Length: 131
Image (cartoon, rainbow, N blue to C red; front, side):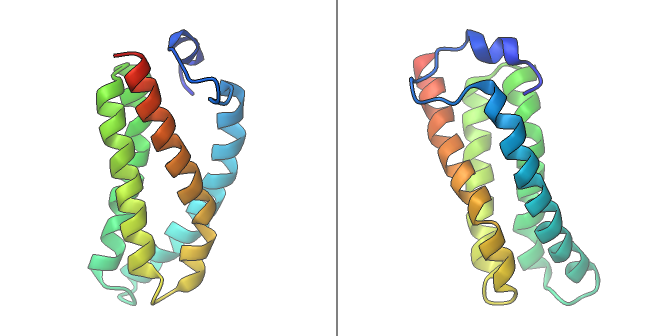
C-alpha cells in the first residue's frame, strides 16, 4: 500500500483485512511469482515454451504492477476494479496454459490465485461502497 491513509478513508466491508496485512502477504506471493514467472520467462526466451504460453504471464505482471498506481495514485476504484479482473483473468489463463507443460508452476501459484480472487471480491465491494 503506497497510500495507507487513502485506504483508511475508504468505506470497506467489515471482513476487509487491515492494511498491515497486505505487505506480508504480497511479500510471500512475490517470491512465488518471481520463482515461477521467472522460470516461464527463461524457458520462453530459450524457446522451450511457445509465446502463447508466456503471454498471459507477461500480461499478468503488467496488470499486477499497474494496480497500485491506479488505486492509490489515481484513486480510481472503477479502473482498479477493471484492472483486478484483468489480473485474475490473465492469472487463470496463465495457469491453464502452463499446467500441461510445467505443472508445478500452476500449483505454486494457487496461493496467488486465492489471494487475487479474494482481492477481486474486496475491490468490487470497496468500489460499490464508495460509488
